[in-house]
Every structure is written in structure tokens, then in C-alpha cells.
Image 1 (cartoon, rainbow, N blue to C red):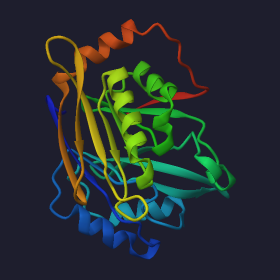
Image 2: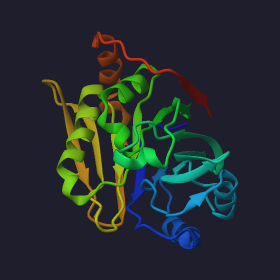
Image 3: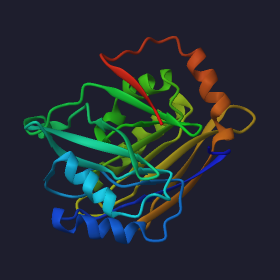
Length: 252
């Protein structure tokens, strides 16, 4: 069970061939003792079967990591390709989230996900919005209605879109009173600049704190007490109706 603080580490991993993915993960996770670890979207190239991902995770020492989101992968599931992110809890697979809003010509290769999921346990409720999903307000609003209090955003953002990407992340955080942690790759033409945005009350109203990564490893500590009351109040105040065809809450 988490107390008031959650230590999060993001790794801005360079894009890596499938054959070297395991070594890259082992190197990154060595001596990592954060509450949550996040990798970027599609940081490893090539297609995977889910069994391959599970085999890789079994060979890693992640049983000491409470929450691990190893970015997203190109997952072939019954000959259908998804951009899929997984959540592991002390090394155990809790579930996955498929990218729903496919960017540009991504839809030529991938199939969009059909369900928005909230992963709830240990005092946290986590939503995973993969890259472009963060651009659309409905996605975060649906997560909020299901009690989500941290949004993780594995991303692959070109450097010429950094300013707009940071604006989207900041807007989702402020409008929902919820932290958004967005992790990008350092490879060209993406060049990192991962960002963590978290809301807090300063006595007159809610503002946001921003931290931007400058190295491959990006550490941030969230104080849940800074925003939790505001998050709950924001849900009550928002008169909008937000829906999606399929919404799931997965307990762990």
C-alpha cells in the first residue's frame, strides 16, 4: 500500500532492435528501486507475441518493483497487430492497454483498442494512455470517472512537436487535477524531453508543477495529498458526460 508519496522513474530508452531489448531492460533496471518504472512507446522495434513479452519479463529481476510499465510493444494477437502496453505488479502481469487513437498512417498497420482500462490496487488507480491518446480530453475524462489518480503516457514524440506535446500533457493534468507522466525516447528524431506534470493547490487555486527530463533516467516524486481532494472535487464539478464503448476496472 502506498503512502502519500510515489517515486516514479522513467527511462528515455533509445529505440532498440528486438534482439537487444532484453539487455537494454536489464541495464536500465539494475539497482532501480522506485515505486513505478516507465519506458517509452515502441522503444523496441519488431513484432512480438504476448508469450514473448512474458518470457522476457520472467527473465528480468522485477519482483521488487511495485509497478512496471515497460512502454508499449507491437503485439501480434491472432494475426491482428496492436500497439499494446502492459502493467506488472511485483513481476506479475496485471493486464494491458491497447492504443485507441492511432496516429496518422498507424492505422494502416495497427488495429485500435476497444477498451479503456483502469488498474486499481495498493491505494492507486492507474490509467495508461499511449502517446496520441493523451491528445483527446475524453480519454482522460473516462479514466477520471473510474477513479484514476495517475495517468501514465508512454510516448514516441518527434522533437519538432515537443512544445505541443507538453501543452497536451499539461492540459490533461490541470483540467483533471491528476498527474500525467509522459516518457519519450532519446533516439532521433524524438530526442527525449519526457515530462511529468502534477497539480497542486497554492491557496488561491490549482496550479501545475512541471519537470522535464535531461538524461536517460528521469526521476520524479508525487505527493498524492497535493491533488487528491482537488481531483475528487473536480469530478463532482464537471457537468460533462464522457463515455466509451467499453470501460474496465482491473483490481490487483
